[in-house]
Image 1: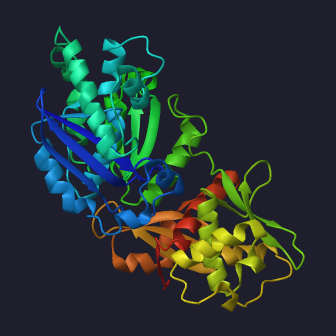
Image 2: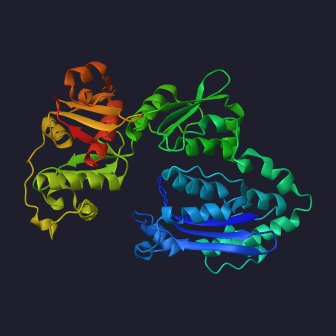
Image 3: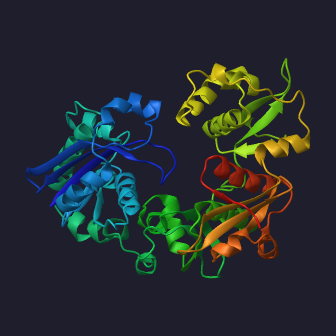
Length: 454
């Protein structure tokens, strides 16, 4: 039995994508014997480009079931079936990540119609679903919708099965790691479905050849060994061992990943992976005083690095609320709209941002700038730890984040002298700027709990 699946998702960074539509057709090799089609409420905004591509608007999913409400139906429908999709690694990964958020390990044998189409239908100009439909006369009246694309994939699968006279799919393809979901480290990572931390892949000489971080380590590591692209196959051939460092805190995992990448520079990581954030907040002259600009980082160092323009707008929106100032008094005109949007996302209760009437300094000293980023001279910030009852602790002193440590007892989280002794300090320079930025962004996003030092 084949469960032919297509998902539409919000897009974005891997592990952050959320499903907005799912379609499953249960196909027995001759006929569709069952089907399930539903919009899904992703509980987050759908980016404009996704709305334009799919035609699925935010209002369309407001009354739709959330993923946990359809999860049981998906499990039951695909139980004992082969998971089939066009570009299956994407659909399978996104679906597994949704299940991992529920603490459930979703495993199915996987069949990707792209490499099979390349084998059985060679010499086509491309192997995207639209091209295959055109070349093979498959009708798809609902492109970029789960229903239409899944139905088209059923027709494609029917053609591929008919062409497979030597039974390659059952005899060879479905026994490969990419299809079975099993690889040399499957048992080792089995308990890591909802585990957060950093992982290291080693070659025969004990060198780290790849490292990464995730809050769903099993799903993330599986991707390396179940992918079939050229880079993944080369990596699989070299890996001999795996080590996982649990953190509990995704922020700490990102910090450790950054530090390890700078020091080890593994051969299979992109050279630019996490060495720095791409954008920053810069102070520039304005008619009535300095204003903030959000732009790409080149040679000049920003006051604070941010992941992207949206993150920068959110940061400035929080500063506007804290200072009681209008976006027009805080940032360049091109950023006013995004900051106002971010203000409303923060549940700003005023009828208009014009109600914000505070003032900013005419000039900014370095000390004043530090006080904007870290509003108190001394701060203790808590995040999750690697096990229950443990905390990851970030220490701010002199309006600067000094570094991090861990605390097991609640009393330790406020013991300033003890925390300073145990502290792993951030280095000065650009690396320190990056790490300061990561912690500051997490603080202003409300992901860290502040406690008063004793």
